[in-house]
Length: 160
Length: 152
Image (cartoon, rainbow over all chains, first blue to last red; front, side, top):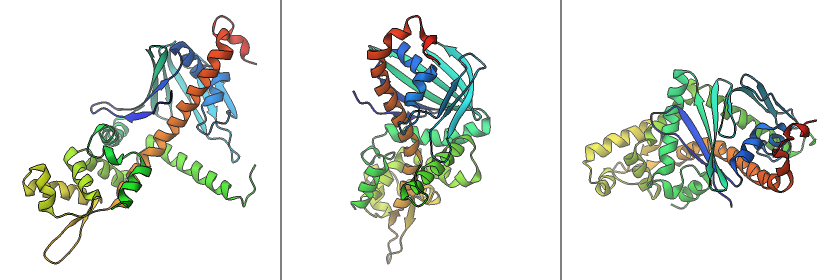
């Protein structure tokens, strides 16, 4: 079943939260996030296996996922801060804190990835943007024009 | 590896550039994003979003805009001022009238700022969703006991 990834930010928090239903039990989804032979198969949005994938699976352990690109790989690297199988992963990367939460939803898993800023200045900036994005998603006014979908927006703007 | 003159190479380079730019925007906000921040702040208000929705249908006078909201004209004018400061709306001179017009490019710019970020994660999650389906058929046994043996 195809579901859509939603992106939102609640007022009063410092997170951007991405949510998606994954069609497998959560221990399996947790494993897909934590074992390099699995991560390498799905991490790259382009769908290519990673050029390299290193995971030192323990609090304080480092990870690095390198996309396979002709001009040299884009890498996503950081350090695990908390690992609670099969519920939760917390990591730091590039000054941001990432939290991955796996929630049982029948035979499926509700996956929540939140990105949280570290410093107060960064948080305020992110919050400002985040709130607007979050409310824009849920509201009725611009919903028909899908503020977050440029194709639909272009169509709406072009139609006048 | 693509040839240096292959247009796809150019597209790849642009994609990479955009991805890097977005990541920097997420991590470190600089003054260059002030304009965008102003626009997002302006959009955080439901009345202002409703005004924009009205203007998508075409330019409109302040009194025409005020009518459906049952708000006083000065209140609408205040909202319009915020939208103008954010570069989302301009006023056009037309004899005695000063109809407001949507700056569609600005709205598109905002939509395009966040959508690639969401789309990138959608692609990733979609990969994961497809991949775990193959795991449950072929690799499920590995979860019980010998998970460390698959690493080479």
